Length: 280
Image (cartoon, rainbow, N blue to C red; front, side):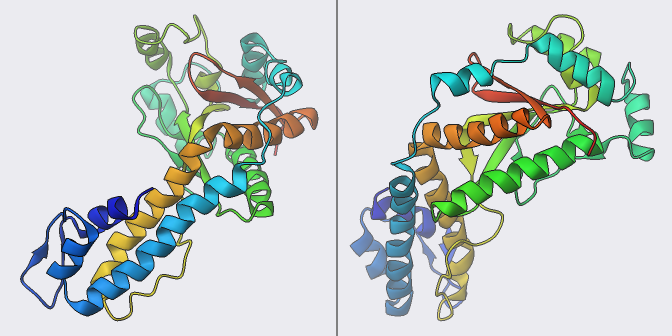
């Protein structure tokens, strides 16, 4: 990532409380510094240097990581959709899940909300609701803990995986089939609150700060610099998405061997389709 791109993102739309002047998008970093006061320019330059290095460090740390092996890919296809569905029927909520039934299941605690956490983010959902069984949430927490532990061993920040599909009603599943030929015909494991899809082509920045940025002299720069920090981490991760796919896949293979999850590496969509396999 070029330092100029970082500077442009920070400066676009930012306004100092000490001035009525809004800092515009600069054609280069020197022009941006000229338009700001000397203290702002110094603080911005120092922090942007660190954020640029952060993006590069994510890539450098992951470069030695091996990609998924043929054996690992076979392990991530060991259980068919039929076997996922059988586990979902055994451990999931009763059918059919209508809107009214979904409300009752939440009130009873048999379905719980799946919100952004320190381990994952939930992508905007078009064909499902962010609800899972308590067992499924516990499974995701363990997956997240193990994944972040592997990242920490490389000196990496705690990247989060993205949940892209969660609980579907029968109507949701039917609507999805109209746009996605990969969607299951008939019942889907997603209808039981036991099954989610995890993206393996993109990973999100940590929930909290990664670097200790020095903005004490220019506090109005803190928020935009934090946004750039998230972008820097995600840019480094995007460069090495296949290596991160392998790290997450290794976690799923290990937990599958322990009888905790069924995992399926999908190809038409860049996701791991996972179903909880035990009570937590």
